[in-house]
Length: 309
Ligand SMILES: [Zn+2]
Image 1 (cartoon, protein in one colour):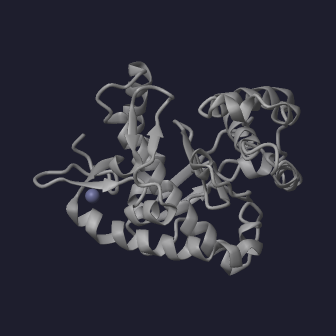
Image 2: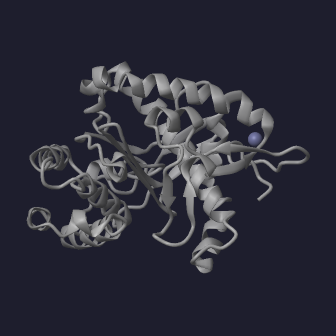
């Protein structure tokens, strides 16, 4: 890989390597030496060794500035709960908009980092998939993300973003989790009692189909099962991802100079129905895939099985 994941341009001359998950973020979570399980396969790496190529200028410039802004922001999450709970709504309050922009930008950076990392992986367990991914590098959405990432402003690429408050556990395996749903711009990250789920560049369609009612119900399930199901947070993740996969309308974003027009619903004034049954069964599959990354002790208890659909 000779392309900078932050700006998408060729790297000539000196290359630097940027942490996908920032160094200060890893320090904050105290997981620098924990190991990242990739596809439950042999590619087992310490989080602090997950790095991708970038220009030294991009890395030391907005890359690191961006990192410290994010640390400040997530440290204030508990006071911002009211705003975080509205991220998925058409909330016109400035604070919600600002938060949505800043967090979407952070998640976009992580998403880009993992796409580049996976494309550059020397021994990928699924070469065919890796080839598909490398084609994604020229995707207009990725290009757009890279063009706006280095701007000082928050990121306003029409995306659906959800925040959930989740219980915190001492168990190392349960302290931190994330995954990338490639190539659909899906990403989630769980840390310090917070869960963020994003569908990047989906034209806000997922938040139309994963309704506020479902959002509130998911939060209720997470709270309700805090003592017997540490993986309850994977339910909304799986459901949101399944909705994105099975959207009856495809996102349509048009790019002009520094401006994005969301035309996803132009030809669909009345919202077409989503296949709810298909969404539920796909969500169950996604849930099982994610849950399988955890040890059987979490999945094989009777309490845990009772919570499964
Ligand atoms: Zn660059």
